[in-house]
Length: 357
Image (cartoon, rainbow, N blue to C red; front, side, top):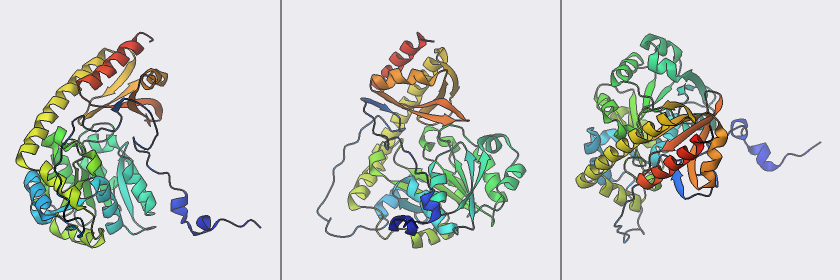
């Protein structure tokens, strides 16, 4: 008889079978031009007051909550500050889903952390298609998500950049009242603000919007996000969230990032990045090495190479982009929108591989 190690004996089956999320930074790759994680190319300077670090922080720093509620045009009691939008995903699953009983609905392909979080908490996944979400009738979508506690809509969607109209999300949310919570992940919303569903919160208590400072606000290293929703919807989440989720230092930097001048600067940077994206798409359209481009919203472009081996030339020169499998094909690539010099490296790579096709 073989004795199992203690950790194998104690480990729940769902965790033993879990495939961890592979982030852009989890792979130890060397390079000098990083366009693989949808980060902003802009850097921030922070002036930090550290005298009070001997005291526990405010669990929900009011100055940050008030600033973000003003920015998002919601009430302060409709905002929870989280450790990135990822914690918001985890909190919703942990709060509203019963392990081994409940399920969530996803529209694939989409952000991988929804699945990882559900698998971690032993919550079933109802896998649906992005095509259904984008092109299906609302009644068909409602039937497809039936029985799910949470319905996740990444808008704009990562990695495709596809967007769902506010009107369609409102209709879905209305139809799912008292049946499911619609969770709209707006990590990239600053790049297409007209698609934001934040203002719908006043009309629906089964709608939650997730936000982040990681993308347009250029604070990926800060790990700061926000959950927006009706007061009664967020109340159970407040019982589940860690006692002190936001450090004093993080709160100070976040408050500075949400002042009027900083928001104006962020919006100027978004305009520049959106223009740079249009230029990149033009280059890609002219390249014989590219077979398809998903030119949706967000600070990235997803494309299909005619031959995935063409990516080797980029990595050999230190240009790091995000390859992945999509639609059962492994020759897809996501390029984050960088600064002028970074995108020049992409242009040089495209010129080099075009000569090989």
